[in-house]
Amino acid sequence: MASNAFSSEYCDSVYVIMVSLSLNMVKMVCHMSDSYPSICVELQDFRRTHPEVTVLDPPDAIQHLHNRQSMLQCVADMNLSNSYGKVDVPRQLVVKRDAAFIPVAVLKAGLMLPIVAKPLVADGSAKSHELSLAYDQESLQKLEPPLVLQEFVNHGGVLFKVYIVGEAIKVVRRFSLPDVCKRELSKNAGVFHFPRVSCAAASADNADLDPGVAAFSREFAVPLVSHIFELPPQPLLEKLAKELRRRLGLRLFNLDIIREHGTRDQFYVIDINYFPGYGKMPEYEHIFTDFLLSLGQNQYKKRST
Image 1: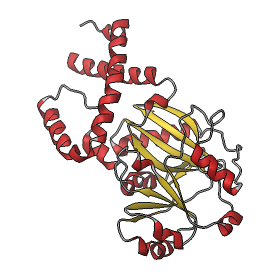
Image 2 (image 1 turned 45 degrees about the horizontal axis):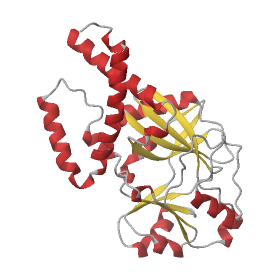
Image 3 (image 1 turned 120 degrees about the vertical axis):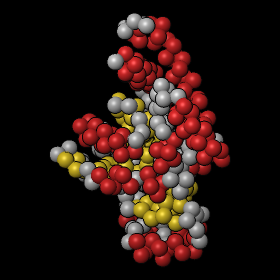
Image 4 (image 1 turned 135 degrees about the vertical axis):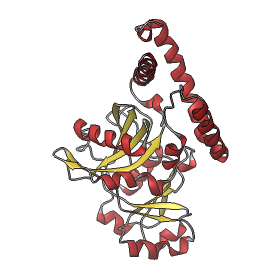
């Protein structure tokens, strides 16, 4: 095969087809949670017997992101801070059973209300994307473990989804939960459930707010603010992505990042998702095709040497 074969139009077309098939195939495998351990064993056996096959991401590394207790630990361990900003994770607490003890556990952990509750398992299912916002101590008992409880950070109602495909980084804005002021916190009680917070529009600049979040905002007269729509600095994201690729051992994932309201450089990673909905990422066809082509080219060079 000629060395320039990978740049042909035919090869590009083939890889575009492969991208489409890969997206569907990986999504299917990731959602087969019941048989995931056996699939991992089979893939590992195949990898050993076929060393010439390029593995995009190893199953054991993917499994790490299926648990919200462990997924953010690598970000916390990084303690990333430079001239472009600081990246941290919200204070959080894991509750695996018995909701009656949640109020006491929250007090002992020093978490401040309101509290965001997320399912402990993040397997890409609709349920794993659900979250709840608890306003008072008594309402915490209504939550259903196993859960990860995160301190809510006011962020102007804007979420940044950072898509990572190999070394490529793409950022889009999404609407998120609106800020909660002290007055609203003192007036309201209960647990509010949201099936999915971030909406699917390409940009929060021209997106319609998710219906659940919009209803929440109207009910409690909490305005969405727009002064923190500015994207996180690219050098900060590049450093964060590079370090996470190394620590996680993954090349296909995205980050949900917020900027703390009232700051320009304090960011929090609140979730990491493996193989997210890349169809919502601008220019995903070209980015993904370039990624696969680069893998093919590197493999070809290794075989040629």
